[in-house]
Amino acid sequence: MLSIEGYRVSPELIEMVRSGAWDPAHHEADRQSRDALAARGYWQAFQKVKTAVSKVLVGKNPGAIARTDHREWYRELFEPCVVSGLIPASARAGYRDDAVYLRKSRYVPPRWETVRDAMTALFDLLEAEPESSVRAVLGHWLFGYIHPYPDGNGRMARFLMNVLLASGGYPWTVVRVEDRAEYLQALDRASIDVDAKPFASFSAERVRWSLKKTKRSLRA
Image 1 (tube, rainbow, N blue to C red):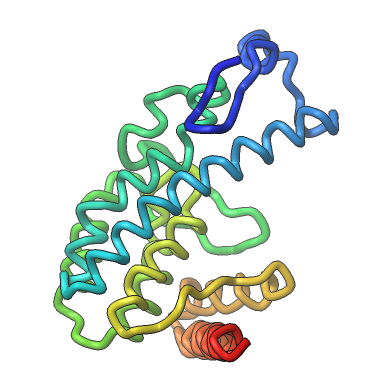
Image 2: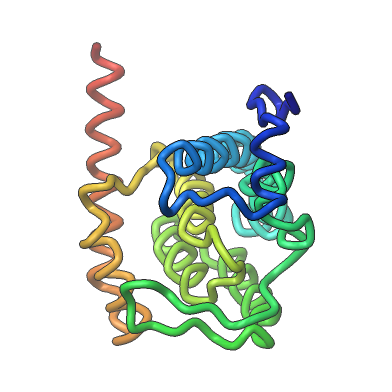
């Protein structure tokens, strides 16, 4: 067995991936392995994001922290998939170098040649913005708008949002599965119609829900 910081990947899984026999679309066991790899990657990335939040809580500029740390979040997010052989190590090396298309959306992200400059402009904007709530909404939306990576952009955008929210003293905020349709529709309105109000309202409601949940936990 090959250990990935506590998650164990069997040689059989690695061989199946290498040989092309691994088929999560049609085999339940393979699907469970894929989900386990994704969950482990999320956990590893989450540890790095918590470190970024701790830097923000002692007064560091959240935009500057996100600029320097976000690549490490991405590397951790997909490390288990690299170790298993599911994706090549080069997939974690940097921003995308090809076109991407989003399922269930009419929005088409910018050409890959523009991504590097767009990300620089995004972090410049986040570093200069004084209001934490504005940073969080714009950072989340624009990260997804640029779509800098081949995969994992939604998870990365939500990590970024929470690092930016931390500077305003807001609790960790999640997008629940049952909110997914409204969430994606609001992002489409922002990206296609250039109307960020629905996404701002959606984000504010999720933060309020998290605040209420945090207060209930503290009283318990």
